[in-house]
Image (cartoon, rainbow, N blue to C red; front, top):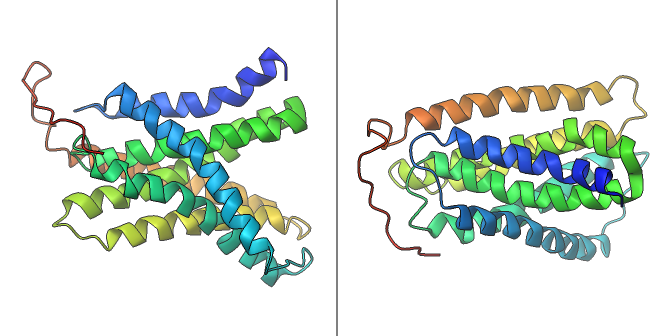
Length: 238
């Protein structure tokens, strides 16, 4: 893979990660922990492949069946991929003492998702070339980011709204729903015009993501503190 192609494969994930980091206006997360979250996202790829290979032993999908492609999109692909990312966010990062405001759910979910999407992007771009790199820069990678923002929004609510842990199920569910809808429209692309559904899903996801980001920015317990005010950070507890 040439340097230009490599840069195009890496750029979207890193750019989105930086964007979300800068959106954390009130109490930003340690860079080291964010890099760890990104690495967890890379690890979630082999987890996905392991689970998927097990499922493939028992389920065969008829690519010409719209019903079976729905199972493929929503359960075999979307649920497995989002679950593989979810276990790292909910199982490890959620427990960190640095996860101390609702917006952190979005930050950590996006960092894990961008690790996943960047590694996946490298695999696709290495075989698909320049056209694949450019197309995925504006579609697949941003789509993964929207799934992550929606997941992180509910994980933030789960931790800070009276410990309503059932929001964690909402987190996995909404990410799977949008991911599945996006993929389904691509999997049944032989249906005239249905590919536009993927674009609609992405646009709606971006709109909801912006709204989710704004809600959790306003919910930050640190928003009324001045930049120079002391903030105490507890030791890492992951």
